Length: 505
Image 1 (cartoon, one colour):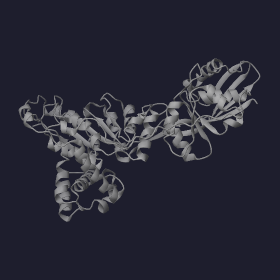
Image 2 (cartoon, helix red, strand yellow; image 1 turned 120 degrees about the vertical axis):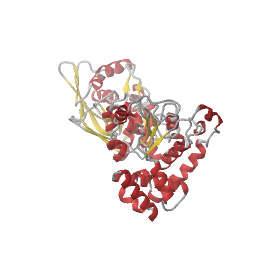
Image 3 (tube, rainbow, N blue to C red; image 1 turned 45 degrees about the horizontal axis):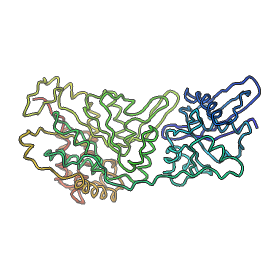
């Protein structure tokens, strides 16, 4: 037979679109042509497939005109994932394999020149797409990728370490390839890392961190250098509960697209801390084909932006829509890709260029205009989307020595877990994600608290968005206190936690 069809998948954002690999052999001048909007890595598969077949002792049809079509033709294909489908299609078209045996598989894998199979990116995305589509096909992947895909329940995943293993398993009366052995998912556990008790003093910022963890709120820490802003942010993951299986699988699928998935961190919330030189593409995603950025890799976890004003303004402004919608749509001339981006933003910054504004131990050298320009790097619309703006004060070294360690991360995490359980029982989600229309039902205010919030909003010139964000924060404070209704004390604390940036004196 001169035509064979093998099924595979191409990554298209977080989706994995089906691809039909058609291999045709014909008489004529010997050639090997790959068509179907394939990038350079895919076209280079010609040499990898040729060497892998020859090294494995299999026949390569040298005297044939070989055409490989990757359908659909308008879907971009990238990477070495089509090496294995091409090799199997060549063998089937040449009569060395039964094409009917290939119909029940979807396969992907990069070939070495010796015929060994190497893992590919996005195995979890392939498995999720195949499960969603349904059907009788099995997934055939290299060992590393097969172990990832086997985490998705309801699929049959086969693994092979060498091209010859696949060929032998597809022969008549062969026993078949072994099932991929999914490594057992680690049980939900408390995240490791630094302990909150390491930070002495800073009761106010610690309280803000607890509230942010309990409600999933965004937080901006402002203070002179060395006050503990980064230390506080790095301890937030230790206060958050483990992810459930659905969220852990979605987070793992995003990390798998970037080749950064680690089974040992299953169920733990990601903590991403890009450098302030990161571009907007690095933060929100992009490229050709589009790849997920830091906001997507931090899905269901924490995105920490240290030295916030030092980030390019375009990169910061690109965060505005994902902070509201929890998704990012990357549009290019030919295609669009959508990635989830439900992350918790924690940021830190100095109050001025020299960093000493508000420091009682060292005078600030900046003029009011310099302070205004520095803080003006953060636009009003971006600040309006942050829930908590908290100053981290300087603690003199002589006072720091006399302070006792505070509560541990485990103690605070227990309170955070109880507050989150109250929110889940009430509205099936954290308070930070409450829609404005749901606030009267799930975040009802006592009459005195309603009046206090309205007077404060009018006096401080808040937008409707800021008004609702303070109401959500107050609901979180009430959850931490175990209160049914949001009272004046909860609203007052929420108002105090949304102070503006410190100004020059």
